[in-house]
Image (cartoon, rainbow, N blue to C red; front, side, top):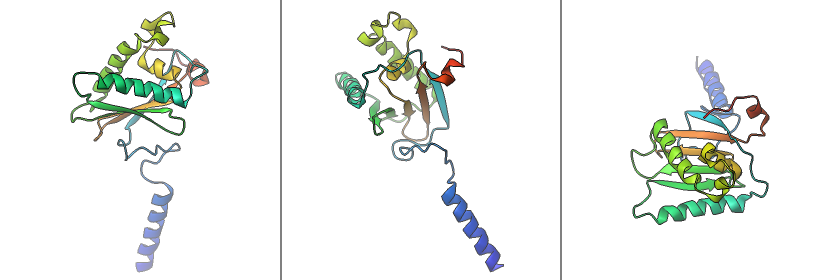
Length: 176
Protein backbone atom coordinates (compact mmCIF):
# COMPACT_ATOMS: atom_id res chain seq x y z
CA UNK A 1 0.00 0.00 0.00
CA UNK A 2 2.79 2.43 0.91
CA UNK A 3 4.68 1.56 -2.25
CA UNK A 4 1.58 2.14 -4.43
CA UNK A 5 0.99 5.52 -2.77
CA UNK A 6 4.63 6.50 -3.29
CA UNK A 7 4.53 5.50 -6.97
CA UNK A 8 1.30 7.49 -7.41
CA UNK A 9 2.81 10.58 -5.75
CA UNK A 10 5.96 10.36 -7.86
CA UNK A 11 3.91 9.97 -11.05
CA UNK A 12 1.66 12.93 -10.23
CA UNK A 13 4.68 15.06 -9.25
CA UNK A 14 6.45 14.20 -12.50
CA UNK A 15 3.32 15.05 -14.52
CA UNK A 16 2.96 18.41 -12.76
CA UNK A 17 6.60 19.22 -13.47
CA UNK A 18 6.37 18.20 -17.11
CA UNK A 19 2.88 19.58 -17.77
CA UNK A 20 2.04 22.34 -15.29
CA UNK A 21 -1.63 23.38 -15.06
CA UNK A 22 -2.42 25.90 -17.76
CA UNK A 23 0.84 25.24 -19.59
CA UNK A 24 0.77 25.93 -23.28
CA UNK A 25 3.20 25.55 -26.12
CA UNK A 26 3.92 29.24 -25.94
CA UNK A 27 4.61 30.31 -22.35
CA UNK A 28 3.95 33.89 -21.31
CA UNK A 29 6.58 34.78 -18.75
CA UNK A 30 4.62 37.82 -17.59
CA UNK A 31 1.63 35.78 -16.39
CA UNK A 32 1.57 35.88 -12.61
CA UNK A 33 3.83 38.93 -12.47
CA UNK A 34 2.01 41.71 -14.34
CA UNK A 35 -1.34 40.00 -14.88
CA UNK A 36 -3.21 36.74 -14.39
CA UNK A 37 -3.34 34.20 -17.21
CA UNK A 38 -5.77 35.24 -19.96
CA UNK A 39 -8.89 33.11 -20.13
CA UNK A 40 -8.97 33.65 -23.88
CA UNK A 41 -6.45 34.77 -26.49
CA UNK A 42 -7.95 36.55 -29.48
CA UNK A 43 -6.43 36.83 -32.95
CA UNK A 44 -6.75 40.13 -34.82
CA UNK A 45 -5.98 40.18 -38.54
CA UNK A 46 -4.80 43.71 -39.19
CA UNK A 47 -5.53 45.65 -42.36
CA UNK A 48 -1.87 46.66 -42.59
CA UNK A 49 1.68 45.29 -42.40
CA UNK A 50 4.38 46.54 -40.04
CA UNK A 51 6.31 49.48 -41.39
CA UNK A 52 9.73 48.35 -42.63
CA UNK A 53 11.72 50.72 -40.40
CA UNK A 54 10.00 49.83 -37.11
CA UNK A 55 12.29 48.67 -34.34
CA UNK A 56 12.48 48.39 -30.58
CA UNK A 57 13.51 52.03 -30.17
CA UNK A 58 10.45 53.29 -32.06
CA UNK A 59 8.06 51.01 -30.16
CA UNK A 60 9.48 52.21 -26.85
CA UNK A 61 9.27 55.80 -28.11
CA UNK A 62 5.61 55.29 -28.99
CA UNK A 63 4.84 54.15 -25.44
CA UNK A 64 6.84 57.04 -23.98
CA UNK A 65 4.70 59.39 -26.09
CA UNK A 66 1.52 57.73 -24.84
CA UNK A 67 2.70 58.03 -21.24
CA UNK A 68 3.62 61.71 -21.73
CA UNK A 69 0.12 62.33 -23.07
CA UNK A 70 -1.35 60.58 -20.05
CA UNK A 71 0.84 62.65 -17.70
CA UNK A 72 -0.43 65.89 -19.28
CA UNK A 73 -4.04 65.11 -18.39
CA UNK A 74 -5.57 67.02 -15.45
CA UNK A 75 -6.26 63.68 -13.71
CA UNK A 76 -4.35 60.49 -13.04
CA UNK A 77 -4.81 57.79 -15.65
CA UNK A 78 -6.61 54.67 -14.46
CA UNK A 79 -4.14 52.35 -16.23
CA UNK A 80 -0.44 51.84 -16.93
CA UNK A 81 0.94 51.25 -20.41
CA UNK A 82 4.31 49.60 -20.99
CA UNK A 83 6.22 47.28 -23.32
CA UNK A 84 8.00 44.02 -22.64
CA UNK A 85 9.88 41.35 -24.54
CA UNK A 86 13.36 41.27 -26.00
CA UNK A 87 12.40 43.49 -28.92
CA UNK A 88 9.60 45.29 -27.02
CA UNK A 89 6.89 43.64 -29.13
CA UNK A 90 4.44 43.07 -26.25
CA UNK A 91 2.22 46.00 -25.35
CA UNK A 92 0.70 45.70 -21.87
CA UNK A 93 -2.08 47.80 -20.33
CA UNK A 94 -2.93 47.16 -16.68
CA UNK A 95 -5.55 48.99 -14.62
CA UNK A 96 -4.25 50.85 -11.59
CA UNK A 97 -7.65 51.23 -9.97
CA UNK A 98 -10.19 48.65 -8.90
CA UNK A 99 -13.09 48.20 -11.26
CA UNK A 100 -11.25 49.26 -14.42
CA UNK A 101 -10.71 46.80 -17.27
CA UNK A 102 -12.42 43.98 -15.40
CA UNK A 103 -14.62 42.83 -18.29
CA UNK A 104 -14.18 42.25 -22.00
CA UNK A 105 -16.64 45.09 -22.60
CA UNK A 106 -14.49 47.61 -20.73
CA UNK A 107 -11.43 46.38 -22.61
CA UNK A 108 -13.23 46.86 -25.92
CA UNK A 109 -14.38 50.33 -24.84
CA UNK A 110 -10.79 51.30 -24.05
CA UNK A 111 -9.65 49.95 -27.43
CA UNK A 112 -12.40 52.03 -29.10
CA UNK A 113 -11.17 55.15 -27.27
CA UNK A 114 -7.60 54.38 -28.30
CA UNK A 115 -8.80 53.93 -31.89
CA UNK A 116 -10.33 57.42 -31.85
CA UNK A 117 -7.02 58.84 -30.65
CA UNK A 118 -5.01 56.79 -33.16
CA UNK A 119 -7.06 58.13 -36.08
CA UNK A 120 -5.69 61.62 -35.42
CA UNK A 121 -2.06 60.53 -35.70
CA UNK A 122 -0.05 61.50 -38.79
CA UNK A 123 0.69 57.85 -39.58
CA UNK A 124 -3.06 57.15 -39.92
CA UNK A 125 -3.87 60.38 -41.74
CA UNK A 126 -1.24 59.51 -44.35
CA UNK A 127 -2.96 56.17 -44.98
CA UNK A 128 -5.73 57.97 -46.86
CA UNK A 129 -8.51 56.22 -44.94
CA UNK A 130 -7.92 56.55 -41.19
CA UNK A 131 -11.61 55.87 -40.55
CA UNK A 132 -11.05 52.24 -41.61
CA UNK A 133 -8.12 51.59 -39.27
CA UNK A 134 -8.11 50.73 -35.56
CA UNK A 135 -5.71 51.03 -32.66
CA UNK A 136 -4.83 47.39 -33.28
CA UNK A 137 -3.82 48.35 -36.84
CA UNK A 138 -1.61 51.10 -35.40
CA UNK A 139 0.23 48.73 -33.10
CA UNK A 140 0.64 46.35 -36.06
CA UNK A 141 2.25 49.17 -38.07
CA UNK A 142 4.62 49.67 -35.14
CA UNK A 143 5.59 46.00 -35.12
CA UNK A 144 3.91 44.87 -31.90
CA UNK A 145 2.97 41.19 -31.82
CA UNK A 146 0.35 41.33 -29.10
CA UNK A 147 -1.46 43.48 -26.60
CA UNK A 148 -2.48 42.31 -23.15
CA UNK A 149 -5.10 44.21 -21.15
CA UNK A 150 -5.81 43.38 -17.52
CA UNK A 151 -7.61 44.65 -14.47
CA UNK A 152 -4.49 43.68 -12.53
CA UNK A 153 -6.48 41.31 -10.36
CA UNK A 154 -8.52 38.55 -12.00
CA UNK A 155 -9.28 39.49 -15.61
CA UNK A 156 -6.85 39.47 -18.55
CA UNK A 157 -7.56 39.63 -22.27
CA UNK A 158 -4.78 39.11 -24.79
CA UNK A 159 -4.89 39.87 -28.50
CA UNK A 160 -2.30 38.57 -30.94
CA UNK A 161 -2.04 40.93 -33.90
CA UNK A 162 -1.25 39.41 -37.25
CA UNK A 163 -0.38 41.60 -40.21
CA UNK A 164 -2.36 41.42 -43.43
CA UNK A 165 0.47 39.49 -45.09
CA UNK A 166 0.12 36.60 -42.62
CA UNK A 167 -1.04 33.53 -44.54
CA UNK A 168 -3.60 32.66 -41.87
CA UNK A 169 -5.17 36.10 -42.21
CA UNK A 170 -5.36 35.87 -45.99
CA UNK A 171 -7.61 32.84 -45.59
CA UNK A 172 -10.00 34.65 -43.23
CA UNK A 173 -12.48 37.32 -44.26
CA UNK A 174 -11.82 40.72 -42.69
CA UNK A 175 -14.34 41.74 -40.06
CA UNK A 176 -14.90 45.02 -38.24
